[in-house]
Image (cartoon, rainbow, N blue to C red; front, side, top):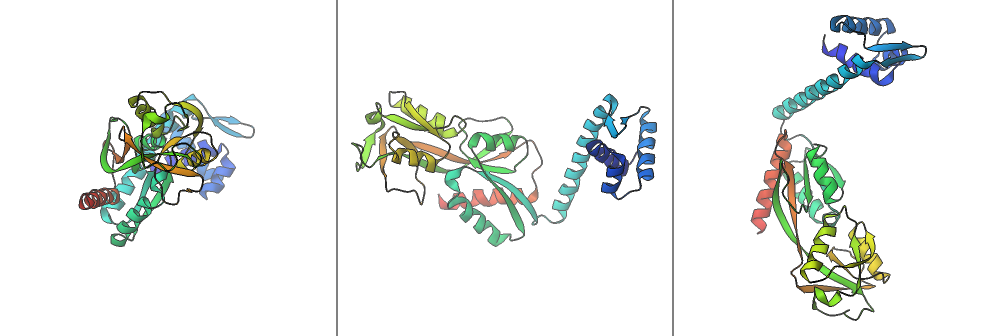
Length: 294
């Protein structure tokens, strides 16, 4: 069997019709039929059940397709790896980041990197820490900027920055205009929290527990601007990282004295898979840039 036979089989399994598959592959239907027949002869089993309107995989075909998909994926990875070796300063880096980094940090970081390597492109995704870590593990993205709270097998991290969390209250709140407070001073206030899939949800609950209370949830938001908007609508108080451009008309921002409210932003990547030269170069660029700014 050869690569073309496997590609023809894979396409026919997806389309389930000889005529449409032949058109897709720019082959004659007879040529496609002969290729599939030779493949079945070599394997010694039929791979498809013929139906009146097309074909469907039988149990042998389903098993074979699973391995063909794996083999084709490995071949594609090998071709990409070789291309990267030939030209390491071209390619695309799949990068994901949490929402607070989107206004300035990520654009500034990528902008500085592309001044050195203008031919490298980025495929950007904004998501929660939990989803970013999952996509790094499954190799859907190359590198992420997020806030993991514990070590994860086969993932490495590099600290990027500490994000201070501030207490925000409505302009009419009793603490509005105060420069610093202890978190325990809002123990009886309702809290606008982050949804459980956000890393900040667990961080904030932990900080409240450190201050001696369990936060009484009034609402859960997905990201910072939503949380701030709900505080501005008098749903409660909240802890959020400061963001440039945050609407301050209805809220007051207060530094928390005790406990010290910080969340560590990390660069995260896989250690058990292939990393392209472009991604490796970018990772080194980030590490060197962060060390210079310390």
